[in-house]
Image 1 (tube, rainbow over the protein chains, first blue to last red):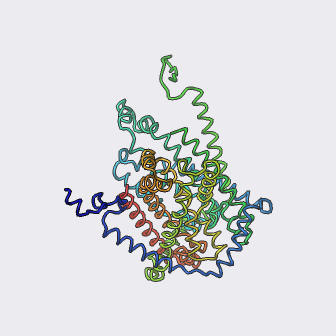
Image 2: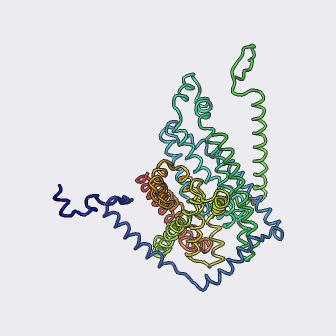
Image 3: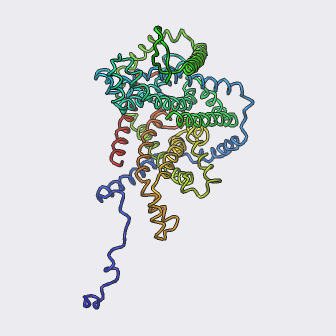
Length: 276
Length: 272
């Protein structure tokens, strides 16, 4: 023992190695392959972006004008267009949310495996998958092509998008419900409708209300862009303002959208906290 | 418990008291009235002739769109690559900006709850409430059409989303680990690196993949306002009424969405 000390073992060796943070990915081969692949990808990706720097520097002046416009938004000169657009957006939002919820409830019931038989389950799940896979804007383009310009296309788009969102979450909620409660109602000899009304509905209602309010909030945000493709709402006004480089009007519209979204988010937070 | 007497004078059970059912009935009446009003406005703004004609138009479009023009795929590889880059680089840029915002917004890490936290929350709300298509519209007007505008639009839109989920994860961390690290004499930054970051790393990875999945969907349509990617081809095909090209583009988008959703589900499953 004393001999080992005498021959001069270094202090570091006797203490052991210093602690090092364990790596996020433990397998070193995987770690370095991923790192290398990421670097190569980033190099290729960044290089494939063509940037016209002259155009960008010229645009920065315009960008600064836009920032200034935000400090001094112009609500008055196009007020009638802005007002009509916002009202149309709100109307599309309300109507599409109501219709969307009304259609989502039966589809949500059908997509819950513990309530629906297999064929109905598959059909409902297919509808949900279709609705979720298609982007709102793309649906809106197709519906504008079919039904013509105007709020009807926007209304149908958002109602369709609401179905995918709401039925999926509702079905998951129903699948997670307590079986014993539903069983107890069934044991009293209730009909199918009574079973749903007294055994299932009370269990999922708070969540359904919360989700509906949340979806109302999402639908308003989406309705603000549907106008870009001609499906009604404030988006068309916004698009025109940008096209004419009327940044002060555009800033006013954006501020109104932000304020409405904030108010909706605040209200939906309160309502969801109360019912859940 | 609300009780009602039936025709024989026997007490029976019902769900609501008189007052509750009256309130509910009135609420429903109000709701229905609002809906009917909204529907009337939409109906007045609609040319019903076109709507009645819709099945014929839909059939016409379908017959033009089928079969999809498969050979057009040769011109789509570059836009697909651009779309993927917009989503990925946009997500990376967003994460770089979202991390500091999240640390400034979380109650337990913010340097000042009175001055800095509200600013961080304002950044989160403002970027979240404006759709990426509007950001793209704005950026195309400022820096010109192209992939760069799309990437920045995706990045700006994602800051709020990522920062919000991240700061909620930071607020939910276990304080004991932070205390243990601080007790060894660690500085503020060391405490962050060794006690907070390891706790939020899984959430961070989950959020980034989740947002990347959403961004793939959003970047497919940014081209409609000139911000590059496959949406540009979609716009061009729609303008020239080349429905068989539109059909192919929609199929490509659908496949991309399904793949990205599968990847994101796999990665999140592996992490969490």
